[in-house]
Image (cartoon, rainbow, N blue to C red; front, side):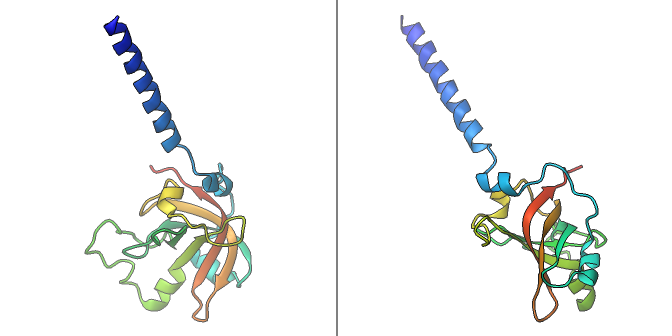
Length: 166
């Protein structure tokens, strides 16, 4: 009888653990709304977006998360992307790329992405918790462009596609 009780307790413990794992691996509700299941065609490079997109233009842009030592904003769905033509080395703390680019080239090779929720504001959740991304992940974002007084490009994205890592 005691073996039977031990077996049932073990079985119930296993069920509880598997449910907890399933819940923790689920996609966040915000991510379900913004993630695209297929990569959109016709995405502009960041350099092309800088050259052709005025503030307020709806566009699709592809880039690699990076361009700075800390490309993510802690606690918010905000991150920096760099043009795919720029060599990346974000995993090397001593690397100066793309900071070794001339300032004007650096400006047209990077963009800030803000993931926007249904309420029109930045989603108040860390990008790395929201999406399956890390430094150097390649993303395709769909949103409205915004420029500041210095010509820096921000994309207010409503949709994002994360390319699978190779």
